[in-house]
Image (cartoon, rainbow, N blue to C red; front, side, top):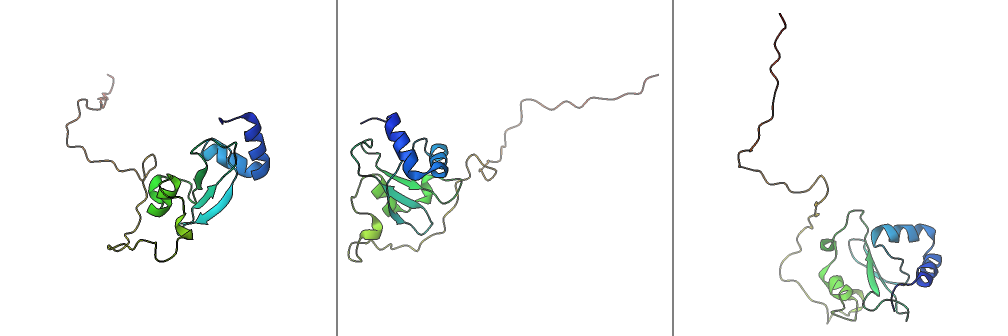
Length: 139
């Protein structure tokens, strides 16, 4: 079923006014569901199993940080969000969890669109030079 006004109003009533505005600013839709888990970075993962939800739009993440991107999600949770697996990583037992061979590297924030964005140094001579006026005294 597609997005309807009735579904939006019902979900807005369920989540409350503050969370409704936060969801509309972040994902552009109002969603209501059960908390499935929280990863080690503080991101919260939700799932809605109701009939009126849009197909393959029943799982979503609520990021902890204001500026967010997909690199802030762990690989196991990323697979669960993309419907690659049905069991969330926090529900797996120790026999089914994967062990990394490499040590865990520190996460680097993606600064695109912020002051932290990467700007390469340009070695190309500019086509235009800024003009500085010559001021002479009047006689």
